[in-house]
Image 1 (tube, rainbow, N blue to C red):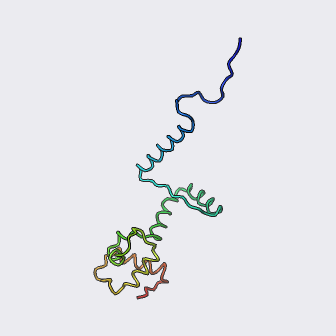
Image 2: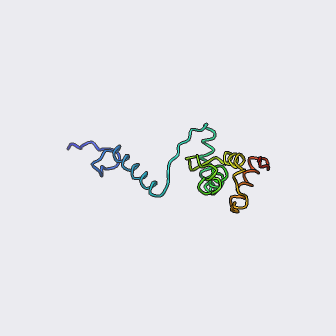
Length: 138
């Protein structure tokens, strides 16, 4: 009695090749992530920093700390009415915080301090503390 050679691995459950199944699974994963509002960002970092970042991603408070860092480092121009007016010629939504302080300082003569809302006044104070050594150069 002749036995047919046994194939190794899982039994075939799809007419698609393994590569096609993998491609479809990755496409479906990307669609789910886009639907959840997620986006992939690729970074080129030195190996040591990349390893540090991978380890940090596992920490429970990483996302919260990262959000706080981004809020201090990059500003949404649309969130700050006076900054939006001063940066009228900028088309980007996001502006480095240090650059925003420079915009406030260079254009201070156009800032109506009486009309600044509380949040934006606090932002200017935070920016001058962090990037201006506590001084607003106007």
